Length: 189
Ligand code: ADP
Ligand code: 5GP
Image 1 (tube, rainbow, N blue to C red):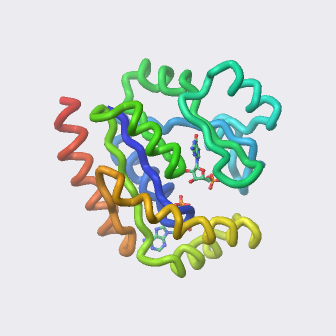
Image 2: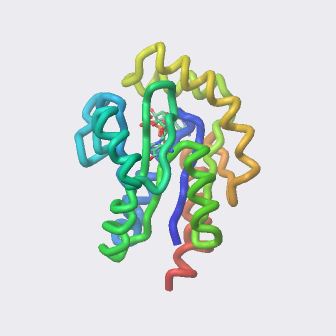
Image 3: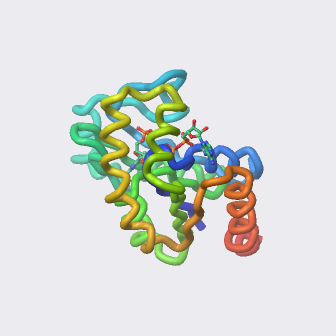
C-alpha cells in the first residue's frame, strides 16, 4: 500500500503529512522528491527535497529514472525517483507521497488499488492566501502563482479516493487518523 497526498499549496498538506509521520514513525516514510526550485527557509538537500539543477533533472528524465514528474510551476520541475520508492520499501516502510494533483493521479493510475489517494481541501481559496502569507517563507509572486492555480486543482478533488476538509486542524488530523486506521493499518496487519 502507498499513500498519496495532494492539495492546492497552502491547504495544510505538509502539516497533515508531518502529523502522520510523527504519529506512526515505524510505519510510514515520506518519499523525497527531486526539484529544480531553490531551497526555502531551513530546507536541506536530501531532507525536504533533492535540490538539483534543470540540466541534472533533464538527464534523469532521459535516463528514465522518474516514476512520475511534472513541471508543477512554469520552469520548475518536481519528480519522484523510482529508487526512492525502492529505498523506502526496502526499509519495510509504507511510502507517503506529497505531490501535485497531476502527479498524484498518475501514481494512482500506476498503483491502482495498492494506492490510497487523499485530497486535502482548504475551506476556501481566501484561506489559502492567508495561510501562505502566514507561513512567511514564500515570495509574493509565488503566493500569487499558487493561489491562481488552486481553483483549477480543486476541480480534481472528485477523482481522489478520499477528501478531507482542513478547516479545524485537530478535526482534520483526527479524521486522517481514522482513515489510516481503517484503510491502511488494517490491511498491513
Ligand atoms: P501545504 O503543504 O499544503 O502547502 P502547509 O502544511 O505548509 O500547506 O500549511 C500552510 C500554512 O497554514 C502553515 O503555516 C500551517 O501551519 C497553516 N495551517 C495548516 N492547517 C491549518 C489549519 N487548519 N488552520 C490554520 N492554519 C493552518
Ligand atoms: P513546494 O514548492 O511547495 O515544496 O511544492 C510545490 C508543489 O509540488 C506541491 O504541490 C508539491 O506537493 C508538489 N510536488 C512535490 N514533489 C513532487 C513530485 O515529486 N512530483 C510532483 N508531480 N509534484 C511534486
